[in-house]
Image 1 (cartoon, helix red, strand yellow):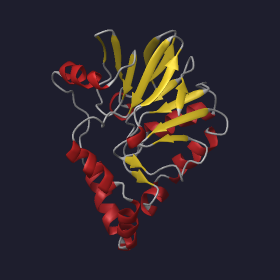
Image 2 (cartoon, one colour):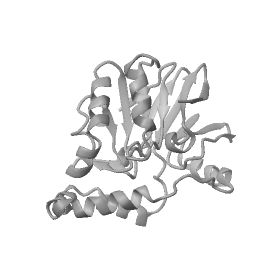
Image 3 (cartoon, one colour):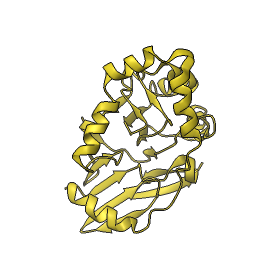
Length: 232
């Protein structure tokens, strides 16, 4: 897939939607009501605190937001880059362009600029790649689902996620970015994952880290070459 980024495209990252973090649902309702208008919505991954196409408990828990996304996808273009908390999603979102981790970065263009988009947990090491392939294995996930009696496993996962503090600043984040951009050859690099909401210009490349919706209550909109942070 090749993406043509549109003017006024909206970017949302790391909403980690769950019983505690409900900003994602509120934001989508604003799009549904036309309080916010866009023709293109880019979901940068980890929009759910956990969701996979095989996990029946979490599909039920997130049913209202899944249905809302599917409704919106009939009227606007939605691109969903899978993250490390949400994967194997295409069956849940038939009209959404779902980009699996192994197919990231997603390349595209905005006016005269080349772009690359990733959730941000790629280009780490082979051990992490192996871990990612294991936890996404449909056979394993279906097996775990089959032994999830009374949702015991799912509730354990949910409780663990609800108890996590995922909002913090990374010291020397620019140093990490400087290393990461060596994996890209585009003019603009857009990532989520790190919850930093920072932008840098390094070696003629522009790096954008989309802010975490659940940590900062912010999204970004693209307007005339500028990635502008907006409060929800």
